[in-house]
Length: 337
Image (cartoon, rainbow, N blue to C red; front, side, top):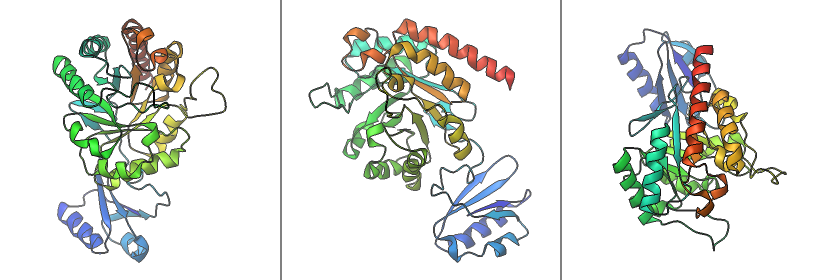
């Protein structure tokens, strides 16, 4: 259930109202916008008399929300959320570019790429320290050493670091990581999501390989229900019947759908979606045009010898060329709007 309060409601009235609602054992979510305040009620609201609440002088409207995702719902939070990633803001008109190698391989490799992507316009650095791989014989990442190298690159370039977590037991290693990524395979690892809900770090939640949008939002709800509202959604392609030419099918229709359903920022990963560097630029431009809040791309200085996903990695020169086109599209959108 949500209650929209009238303009002019005082802080004292708001506190009394929310205190009364909490007396019913409900969690109360307050969203203060420029023109209205929205009270979101989470829990068993069957005990509440909606007509009684609607009759209060401070209340403009009351309505029940049937969607199972509450905290992530735009009805609870009409304004776009802006997630602060160590100074880099995402959402609400703030655009993020997260770039770097699929896997951290060495200090020289990572720092060189970090400097190159920063110069081209990236404002965050990605790199896998823990790598979930389909085959147990493939490179699994440098793990703790990889995180140390990411933090060295951060110190060298100033770029906030984004890296993937595999297990809640690894959380102590992520204390200085700026954004924790939850990969597609862990989107429904609910015990991990619950633990991430206890942190206050920004979480980049990737869509599962065959997950619906509703399932994806429910996974975000797990994190937010734990108290961490710093969640960003990342569309990275879904598995379909045709994998001959692209790794996955990039669902760009998810962008406007999510913009309608949720206030959380939406980031697009065209690298994992297509699996081929020759398609990354066009899909990145399409994502920007669709209204995405950011891009996540893989960049490697020597893709032919990359230890992981070299085929989908852009060279620094290709990334720089992509960023020039991205900026043209973004400027055109600003002028159009």
